[in-house]
Length: 141
Image (cartoon, rainbow, N blue to C red; front, side, top):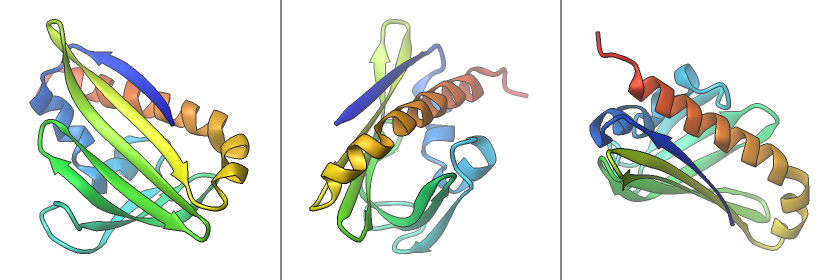
């Protein structure tokens, strides 16, 4: 499992505004082309499914397996031979908060994916954490 952590002075509500609005990630995050709701509950909750398109990564459908507003969520995407589990959490940290993003690959082909995508995935996660923190810290207006 790989994990990154990004500090933020923003409150949990502001961070969740960007972290939990997954359908707008294509608008906000350079690491996503688009995220489109394709099934399950609306508004987003456990069981909601999203088609996720990212540059240089196979398109996959991710299903929400944990949804806790203003705290975090987990989703699992599957392509043949690999399941990708992504956790996105907001944790208290002193006077602010911390965004913690974690990624894990499992399945019979996970061993092949790790060396190919680990460095790229870490860079993408760092960009995502920094971007969400930056957006949430902007003055409201």
